[in-house]
Image (tube, helix red, strand yellow):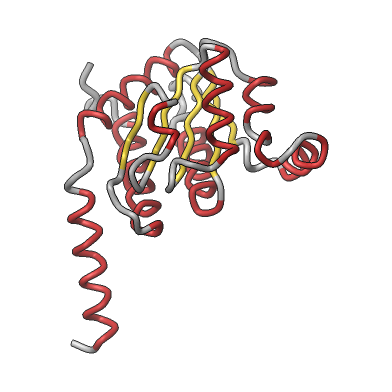
Length: 192
């Protein structure tokens, strides 16, 4: 085994060790909440920065498309970091710290759900969006890393990946949202 292979194996072992520390009861609770919003025809909005923003985009692409199978009720989704014009307008006219909270204010109601992804849990635009959700009665899910940052105390439901390695946090978040999609797609796997 060469050095790169050894490093890769160590990385995978570390990622799996961190994954084993994730609270699977939280995942079950999140699945039930997403299903509740879906059944009630609510809207799911997501947001994140950088790689976490790509995870927020991924759930919209996956859940909005794959869960919209023939005979299935569509899941209404939007990702607040995907509209470049809106991001730049809110940044320019207000501040980057408000790019998500302003969209929460414009689009979401108390029957909807906001899902954010933040490795640190301390990004000001995520904190402000969660605060705005709390003000408006919008239920929230936060996929977090590190120690959860400020976001862990502002969200209704959190999924904490207990690692200070950003790439491992983002990888595990993506693995979990793919798992959630599989459960929601196959109702035979879903337990009420």
